[in-house]
Image (cartoon, rainbow, N blue to C red; front, side):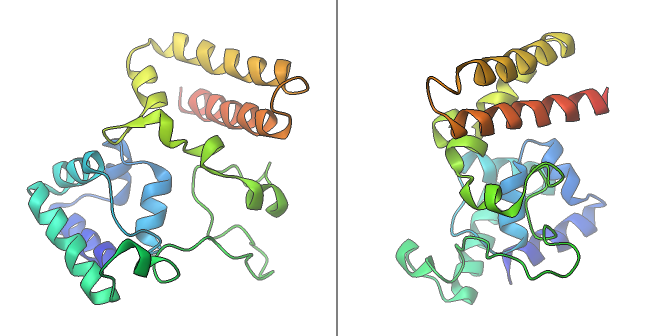
Length: 189
């Protein structure tokens, strides 16, 4: 069974939704990749979170992943390249060119050319993830809501302040990321 179908079936059985996985800390990009079969493996922390929400043991999640790999005909990460791990292609102009993009990207502010240039160093840097937890979520958990908003605002200002002297466009993208996160946090308040 394809992994996303296994998850959907289990969520339905226990009366949960994909959003419950997000609330448990599974990243939006990870969920997008699962829902679009654009992954080969998952980090241990992610499989733990999925297991917790689905009320199964972590071994069940790993077994479902292995079954997915067998059904997709994947046996090694190298074989996965081009089959399951794909960079998104430019969508056809069907009125909503961003319909397949990850939920955590503000498509009102991001054009396709900017999206094409995005990389993990801006949106999901691996050096900010340990044990399946992104640093930003750990920071949020350690602060009051007001402090976290101040942290986000400070980072927007920091990246705007330095972009001409340090990392140029990459710093502008980081400033946008923090501004989008600040906007979403304020909308939730």
